[in-house]
Length: 198
Image (cartoon, rainbow, N blue to C red; front, side, top):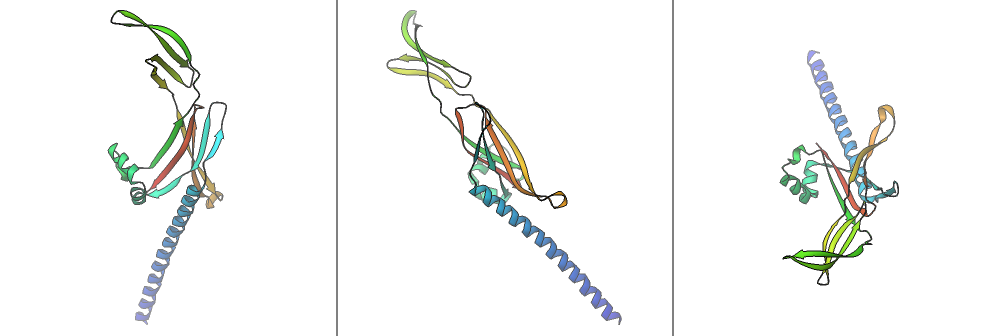
């Protein structure tokens, strides 16, 4: 009788441990499935472009969620660049990359100007365009325009979470990032945000 009670207790204990292990494994698999689904949606969805006002243009992009080993494998070039910056990948929380293209119209005034070279004044034409978004200055000399163009661009980034469900059953559906440019001539061509999971 005592042996049968002992065997029964051991069987119940083993069954309990098996159920606990399977419960934990099921939770992990559900989390991986949801992460995979979110990453697939992020990769297949297009950037949503938003015009905030006459100057500010923004894009909204879903974020990818990768583990450290996946990030090293799938984004090896970015991981190498981050290492060169002195950051250890294992401490990385998130990585973002934005591609910005600046294209704007040039409507510059040409004026005559005097340049002193070796104490001899030389007449040349000067080109200048100064706006809040484009600064162009140069001199026309020998049928060439030599000068400098500056297009200041400030990018504002907001990372936000979209939840699914409510109260206790609330889960992360997607992580979004919204990037806005304060220069109307700067177009955000591509944006990527990767959340690193430990």
